[in-house]
Image (cartoon, rainbow, N blue to C red; front, side, top):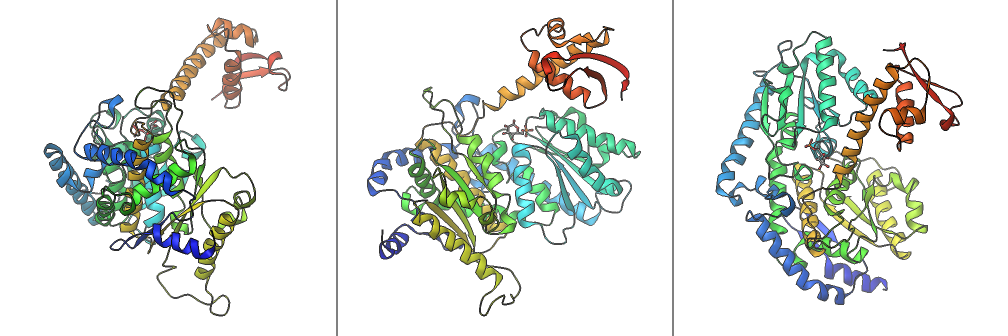
Length: 528
Ligand SMILES: O=P(O)(O)OC[C@H]1O[C@H](O)[C@H](O)[C@@H](O)[C@@H]1O
């Protein structure tokens, strides 16, 4: 297309939400009118599915659950019995936050809480992390820290940072299921750190979980529910996201209001007037409805750095499915990665421009450069002009080389626009899932890795028992046999190597470059 035709296509496909100041441009995605025509019946069904979901239908059939994240920002559309719960929960979060800020709720040792330590993983971490990075004020009433892993060194790093302020740190433990090992481990490690300092952990802890499932935290300072009908990856507007955001001084009501406005806009059953439907169309066109192209997310704004990581879970855990809703094997998905512009122009954008054309880009553009004035870094040019120029330049350069892109533009990064962005993508994922006929709201695949890990830990216990009861160094095959795992010698080897590296009493003898020749023994003196 020549520049005139492109300008026309830009105008033809531009979506603009006046109140939110949000633009969506899919003109640089190469799809044809005939594709749009052919998808119309699918979109009609997607709009109907979404309507049924919002009315409380069982949108997650495998788990027999309702899917209600849209109700969180507009309790009036929730089933009557849930409306009250949503409103009461928000009120109790606000009351709790007010008391923490005033110092009415405080730790036994300090006048006020100074820090938040948020423990959770996946959907119980990514939203709060993204929102904190995007919106935390320069001087928040409480500073936030996250532990979202079972990495001992990672846990130590955070605990060292908080060492002198542990007594004024509010620990929020977040787990929908109440049984995620990483979260449980981190909680026990943090509890241990409190005990080391002679502090009462429970007097500093808050639980966000299905009430009573986190038994180990019973008797804590406060508990907020994680509703069964809110999925982890869509839980930012529930207690999961709102508590830490409010404690940090972020306007949670504005976050909800932005999402609510976007929900209204994305409820419109008309492709061209519905930004989430336009996104779903663009994704479908890019990857043939099979995710054949990856989505590279490039926000040109440092505050939105974690958006791609947040979207990675939302999109990939929702759409990456083996079966469709009719039970056919489809292996669907849509890979998401990204970081930020213009930083990435000095890194992986080289490949985007010249290398493998297996992706489309989503630029996130923010019109307001900063709140204060800008100096000129060249005559009539500011740093923000550079940033904007780099975005436009990259968009051109990619398109010239047959690389497609979407651009989402917001006026500024604030609670309302961040709420709207989250809601936009939540809905786009839901609509796209309908187009490709999959259940976006379950995650059967993540269980496989968890089960395999559990089996390894069982094997580890067996190996240690065998080793502790033998005086002679054992060959790995023999050990595996004795641990009833004759066909898992490689697993046995990996377990031993890890234990040997961590003063757990295990010693490996022989040439480390030849794992098959090694023997192992247990030496109590080498443990601890
Ligand atoms: O909130 P939790 O129950 O602890 O779950 C945390 C995360 O882990 C699971 O494995 C799922 O894959 C995620 O969807 C979930 O958000």
